[in-house]
Length: 218
Image (tube, rainbow, N blue to C red; front, side, top):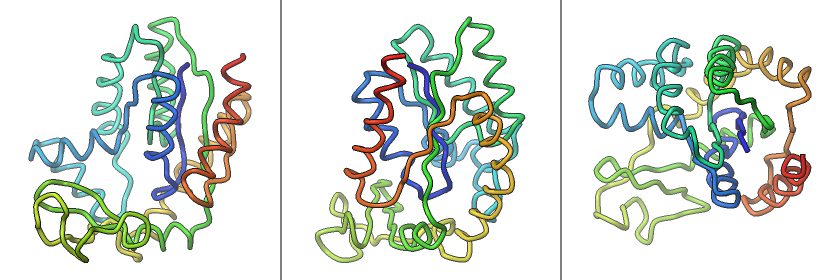
């Protein structure tokens, strides 16, 4: 099974993608994790990625393709893979298509998580991260044992710049403008599965697993 997960920032792609990867035993390739690894490593690529994220803009295609498609090679030959957060533009989709054609493969489905903008803003405003060990929390859903303090290392938690409401709204507007043609592209090919991303993670996961039964059978 070869899947792409799409959806606006804060829609829950990472959470649901990990659950699907575990259920089906496929490799989870997350553009967000790759980006964070590059940023934490203070690489030249990471510096470029951070500058775009902090401004609320999408990372350019050439940088994203370089970071993600290369990592996809490590998953070839496995039982399948799941791309989380990639592609986001037509150019990225074409790069993915080219990589798959080279291996004689094709996509099984594209999952699109749909969530209202204001729900996402509220979700992301509650996020907190430890600047020391990188552990993530949420003020409502995954609160630390001591308010504002990391359970693992005791460091004061922070709100990332790209989780602040004004930045989130800009990121969502940018995302919609860039990805609407891509959603239509996959829809025309009969690959798009629209999933309601509202509710608890368990509720969303139940809907998603039900929809994937058809893909699994196919």
